[in-house]
Image (tube, rainbow, N blue to C red; front, side, top):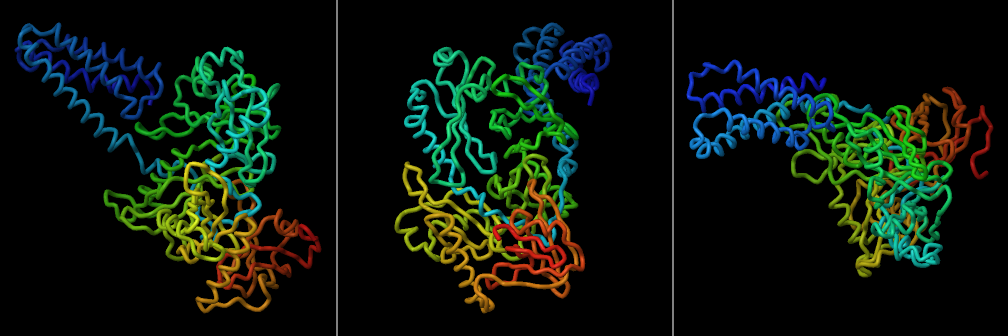
Length: 594
């Protein structure tokens, strides 16, 4: 809505009751002598409110509108003061008049904003939403799973500050670790810690230049941290800089003061150079919420700012939609989207909300995804939907659990009391599970957690897995390394299948399926391309894989080809199974590693 029109509406909202109140103080008839006063008040408020909407940052949330409301109330008090003939009554009644008018304004703004401007139903469709084929999430790449928790990474980075190059330069006396960013760079997953100044005096000591950053592997708890300092790695824009050098303040003072600046995040480009990304937020589809309208990429070394449209962000930029934005949009969708769940109307029936907080998951693709659980508005502990939002594009995909599935709280309790394969010492050794993430492993929807010892010293003790549909303590497996935990998990799945009367078929861990392709297709999730293959005579079965895992023959596969697919034999029939290898008689290409 144009600033002038907003100013016109607000002038009308305030000027008319303001004039009537002032006229009451004159003790005249309800309309006598009010024309000039109404015109004066209307003109004055129109000018003030229009300038506020034109020159100020976006104020179309109730907290953002409060300063303008207070300004209008101040104008009201001044006008009443100089317009009344009865100063004693003003002193006696002015407070009650102001309070009553403030209440009136609050009710008008709240009712209008909540019921009309919010437009939450349209907000629920702000991003692209689709349902996944077979209602199954794509298989996770076990090579790129996060097994190092943020606490462990912080401990390792802190140790580097005193023992690495940073220790030799005595950085810890005048620099601190900044906020870590989990990101995919150089084909691996890392926590990246920028160094920041410890006070203005130390900033002057380094001539307002931060030396660089520390990288801690998120995949390998035994890997040594990597330090990058000086030259192109040094930064004039960063955390703790003060005096306008923080990323959001830097953008604000360089031409972007009319936007709300969200989620400043340190990201490395393909060459490892440091940049800060800042999402530009502005009111969308009405009054009371903000949504991304663009992205700023700030060269932390030079301070140069480049603005990108949402559909033109560089491929190495991982995060446009912050954790808070992802949760807000998912909640809008779960509550209001008729297309998603049929939850329109005032009733809470068929409405859903995010359980817990969104978790950022990388599966070896070029972009991360926010994974969220949706549960109903009732006080239950079951999952209704799983949402996966691409953090770079905002596109959401919906997955429906095939069976009963618990939310984070009961799953966390199961991990803490683990007694499955390899987990006999978890409880007695006082290990605690942290950082629950949801994956598809061995064709099973799977919870994963990292284990740390109880206490203040964060260190890696192992990894745990449990089938999301069988998330009880006696099914949680443990391994002192990721590979050991994966091996134990496969054995646990086989045992679960046997106990359920579905013993694995002969042939060990793998099962080979040969048939004719009935249909083949692909989609991109989180920047990774997944191929889906169905075979004739195998109704209800879908095989999923990537070129990096099963070879290039997958790209050239066509309907009617005779293919051989190897899948893990875990003793349970899943509608979607992850391919371990794929060969096509028409395209005799070798598979990876052969």
